[in-house]
Length: 292
Image (cartoon, rainbow, N blue to C red; front, side, top):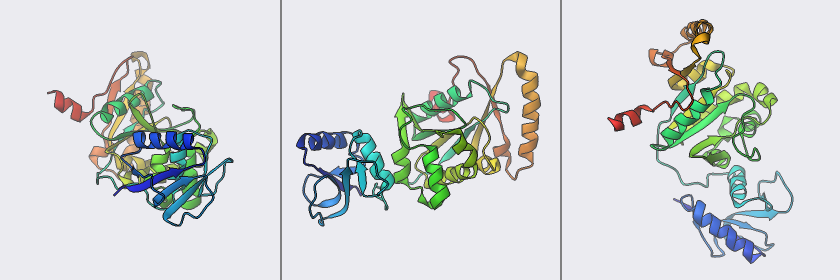
């Protein structure tokens, strides 16, 4: 059931614009409520609001206080901060779903891998709820100002995996060019120091089952990659140009030998190799079936 959310401010122009934004972008998550009572209130007014269950005050300064939201940011960022700071569930429960993990990893790396992984996630997103996640250094798809894997993995480091809630995932969720994604680590040192926490984050993300499919693009291997592979339902590697195939085959042979040392079934061990060319797309199985 959706919770009632309202905004009450001294600046009526700001209040109307914010409410209009909420009605347009968040009506599936909240009932936008204009009465001075309800469940969730965002305000800059100083008075008794005991008729509300949760009150969040707009602040002129950035703060780690869970009841203060920074006012000088976009409506989207204010709501994302609210979701991240919420101490209890405030989003309606989605339908139960079992997430599938689609992994892209090429031994030795391939410059076209991320392009193909993102295109795959876009095509999946047209049929189901799909998420793209990149693990590796130097990858920023948006403005780099919101919550990202550094934030989420540090949350696990300090508070444990259970602290990652659907609200926190929704707060960090980005969308651009028909792609839903989480921003990567904004500092390579974070990625190096939080390798174990990243694996815990992926386990938690699968456990929450917020998405039908998660496309994980590995620029390099995290700590305890066996746990990632054990969750994987499809694994893609990108073939290099013909003149580089011999070196690639040597790396792939070592990679397959390594996977055989892990406790996984035959499905997890299957690698689907695809050749990259400009504009190449990997078509998800469901889309292939619908075209037939």
